Length: 149
Image (cartoon, rainbow, N blue to C red; front, side, top):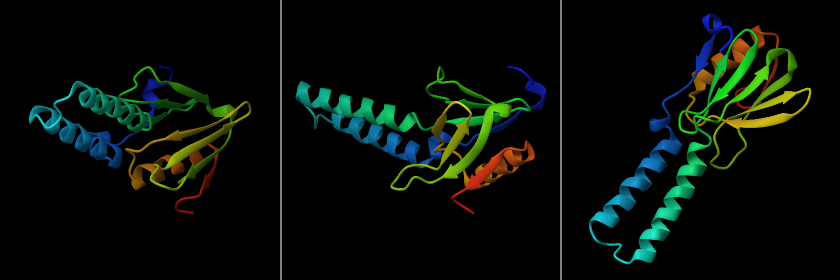
């Protein structure tokens, strides 16, 4: 990674996040059902496994964190380790911190010269979001905060 001496990581504990609690709770519940013999039919076990895979994929996809260097904004995911998104700082036109509503997590909406992306980060706490906002502004990136104002 370029500029590794001058990087700041914005992350949280994804295990104790809301999505992490749901994921762990469902895993414990379904494990209990299977091991106690409540789910005896193979078709029910396969259905529980299918629900588990969909939940796992949906909830862990948003467990992103950010790395800010002097040249790039990087997005990483601790579970989907191959998911790497990079934005050159000079290409970023604006960044919005938004709460899309419902039970979704706060997202970073990155608008560049070529594209726009919503990036959820369900494990980040409020103070981490605010620190990211402050550091983006220090890098002369326009930040629109639709969560805290």
